[in-house]
Length: 481
Image 1: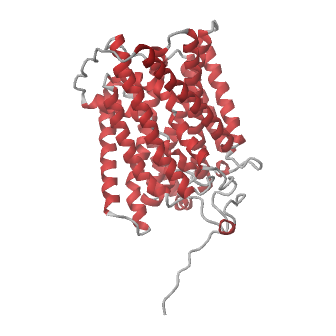
Image 2 (image 1 turned 45 degrees about the vertical axis):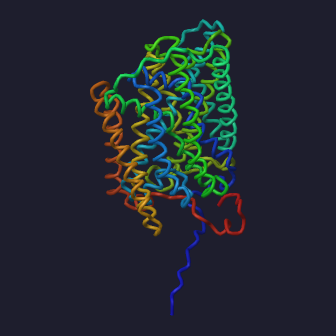
Image 3 (image 1 turned 90 degrees about the vertical axis):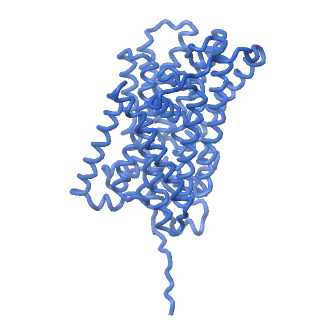
């Protein structure tokens, strides 16, 4: 007589306390788009790539888009099978096991925190520029630092208030900013036309410089996977999250290619091939236009920081629920149903580091470049492990195909080449950047060893996700269990 195996339904979700199954697709998409910060990227990162490497913008961004699409193709199958709240951290745990997951989790935490700092820093910088445009005479560094601290406080309040409120704020802000920049480029083309003089042909780039340019350009896309941290709060997460992860890099990649082609082939020929100004500087034809652009960029980076920190808080929340970090981090607000303790813990360093950089007088371009490069190391480390985990996760549930193994192999190899090339050049240019990331990962290794010795039960729990509970079978939109 055949034995029937019945799947066990959990009595309570491991991530109970969050407001489950309430976010529509638009809010999930807003999380992914805002974390990528397209308006801010279009205005600033191409100039950072030029100043740091001199590599052709269209080449660097095209290669970065290819890398990101590989990562998205690896992450998406996992989001179709698991409602994660900690994003890549849980997927790595189910594919590679708890030890790589903790290492990947800390790498992701590092990346989310650094992008949050980048956003907070940019809010202060571009708000200060806007104020100077209208005649504000206060000391630049003081105004910037105070703006950063104030912006961080507002972000914390919005995140505690609820992810749906935060998502709607960032969607409106980002849509307005993108629309304004596209309209401005169209107006410039309509009034000035395309120059007859072609840009000087780009010289052959050093492979290591190209790797750094690609990492900086990948910084324009990182965060698209953060939609997966809303798996527990999204309606129909196995459908909405994969859709957001599929379309976010495609849509933002199209915007970036338009922006960099505009800068490379419309603006630079008029101003000379050596010009490395940001789009905001090149399009600012009057004080009022400059003011409007600066405000758009500041609000766009505000949305970016808000989305990145939303994802960061949920990774810390899950680590608290598992016992990998203090259990207090796994608490949720009784009324708002948000991980308020994790939010409040994450905000002080995210606010303090940018403010300290501003008060120390670190040049804006250098600070932004360093923060983005550092975040790139964190994201790429997590992406590499997640891509390696994908076929193993599918294999464990009997769904792996040859295509899955081949895709993972190509993605992991590509990411490894980019990381090794960029690290080799950074060790010569700015060794403190890879050294800092290396120190964080050594700390993560020490944390794993401590967990093995003192909290083996916590390692065994790594990878909690939003499991189906009885209420989900009766009510498609539970209030949260």
